[in-house]
Length: 173
Image 1 (tube, helix red, strand yellow):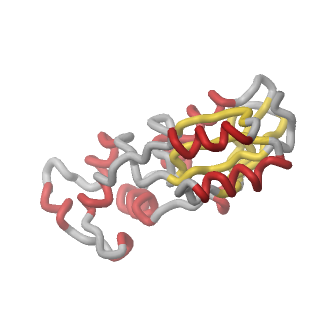
Image 2 (image 1 turned 90 degrees about the horizontal axis):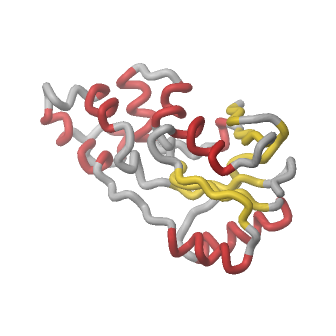
């Protein structure tokens, strides 16, 4: 079961994770200006745009398996192309929604730069990209701290992202 009050945990992404690159190319006009990849926008803390965009996709298997050994995980969703609105509901039971406070999403500077540069709406950013959340796990509220502890012990800077409520889809507030 997945009752209201269950907690959604976020596992951070390393970047765009190979998703939405058609839009990324358009945002930065990469086809017409490939040298933009060698620029180092201040927001990226010394990395070039190319380095930030090509950060390897994180693999979550080992840390998640460690959690599964000790905690009853009720849902798992990899946040890929389709972002929050398409991927998170795949892990929810019928009649459940994910309630996420946008202020709790630890959005990396790269995504903020993409949104500003491309004048992309917040909805489209959350709909297309992972916004810094590579995977979510849903656990009972009483298991959340233990799951976070296990994830952190296995190299993941996991955090509470939201809660399960009644309804459907994703409610970003």
